[in-house]
Image 1 (cartoon, one colour):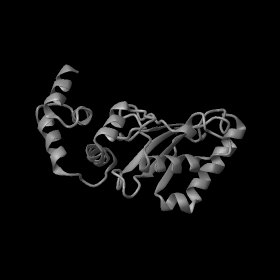
Image 2 (spheres, helix red, strand yellow):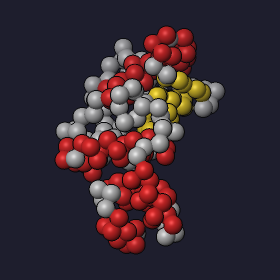
Image 3 (cartoon, rainbow, N blue to C red):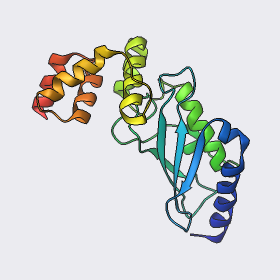
Image 4 (tube, rainbow, N blue to C red):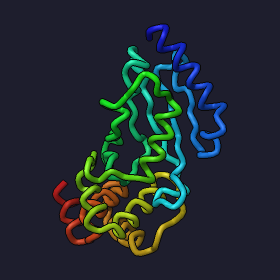
Length: 200
């Protein structure tokens, strides 16, 4: 990696570790490899959101051209959010694409991602199924996001209604992750989710 990128990311890594703002917001960052090309981030689900109480892991890859190009970031922890792929963890956020500026830092990125969890942009979605649910049925979206936060991010247990449906289909021998994805994308209708699972 270019020397400028290494020096810069080392400084920013320390900035996140020492920042009162990031520790107050329960944001962490760790090294994956010693040469600072890959980091592991963790953000807490913001209060008063369906993600509250969950912890969400991020893969952060630093390009050779950093800070002139943004880091490549994706969610490792599965999450139900209009701007994050429920399958790959890819993120739709302007500062990770065309609105990146060299003055931005790792701290800015992590705080922006946490803010995105609190303020989704359903009209610029990464996941159309989630965005559609967010707009058409906000209550179901909130319950689904809470449930994903519980299963994948360790958030508190959501209502029992959705959990029962998951248990019903996993008792039929389907993989739990596949069941959660099928029910979530089929508005928690057991019959259409079962058809989807049988056809995959």
